Image (cartoon, rainbow, N blue to C red; front, side, top):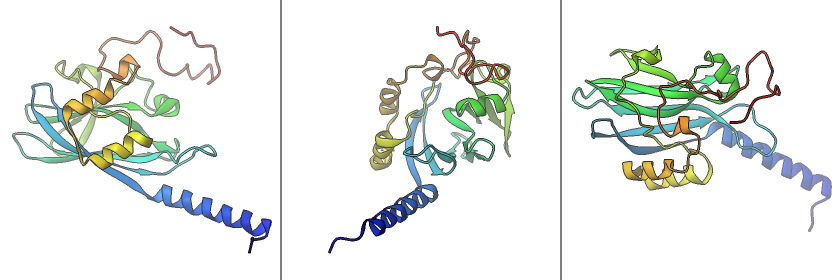
Length: 216
């Protein structure tokens, strides 16, 4: 027997709501082999949950992203988390690289879209740097970021089909990480820049999101 149209529409709505609820509460995790500046390799565990505002028909954004790894030589286990921003409706950062120098771990990330870019002071180049002091992560300025750290060494595309492959693979080797990141087009996400960009990624706050913005 064919269900009445009204009942069919109601069932479809309930299915959609259940799907969105499941997506918002679910998460993914995977492992990557990270190549450090001195040739050493470490394994990082990455995970993310989904939460926040999204357009109709668009997937739920990343709500929180976490990376865990063991520091070579010291054996210390550290965790860095890009937390959910209530003011952003998504996570604050996109992870770019994990590095270690003389037993001290560092992380560099880029603000997640323009609201986050404005929130974190519109850095140019568009990076926010972190250093672990042995107990907690501290934000540092560009001058304190070691010059040895130039590479983006974690996978950048972490959604959709690419994410599914990462989760399925169990462990993505360092050479495959490099290969996957070759698809990235923006120079500021291919390597860690030291010079200011002529055209920052987001238009000035005072001009609004639709202000004229020169295209290089």
